[in-house]
Length: 336
Image (cartoon, rainbow, N blue to C red; front, side):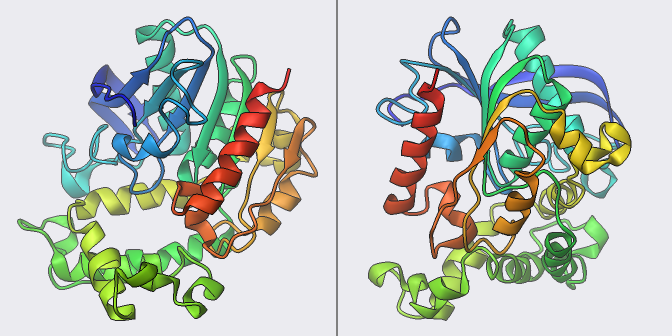
């Protein structure tokens, strides 16, 4: 990123969420550019921190602060916004309440309108859990949002996706050092197992078959990749944060907000213009889900990312896919 923005914190005070009440809910966010420019909201994904949004934000990138006022916002439970790891008693650790996408988007709306004075959002863009938030934005605030771009995400978490996530959840929660969430030190056994199970789905079978995990010589074999990337990449994360965030992902379903849980009617009522970008070989959010959703969306187009990188293709994981995605996003944003 060509510029570094200070992380800011908005205190909501008492804030109701799906699982109860947070006495002082906090949303972490960053802003880039001139507030007079069109506003783009870019929420984080699973295991995403605010600084991980840099692959799209910066001069000469698709979310250029010289053209747009970019607001990146951290999900609850990501360790920056209110999370099990940073919330004081009595809602610390395993006592942190259940939080949904709807709760997150309500909080984000408050940041934009009450703190930043935003009257209209030009576009919400997001990857994975960020993509699901983009859908929620389009349903919850239809007259506030002009465009939305879900990348490698769906309007509801499919039963298969939910089932996939039960694997890493079980690996962590059943580990000998997790202690039902009351651990006093990092539950390394659980987090390492969690990382191996979760990341098995992050890339496609074709990527593994072609030994993409070697990363052009960075790793010498599969176990090095599993040990350093899949395990090591998670050891800085809090275990309760990982599980609470995972629960938010599993509960995703925009139709629960309106239209009596009628999925087709809910999507059909979206007013904003959409660019739907699934990955052809995504094992979490199958492209078939997006192909089904596009049937009900009245003002959206589908552009499939043809990549063997699978789900992570949408997160700036490689130059080829990143160039393609940013070009499509730029074209969409610049359309009249």
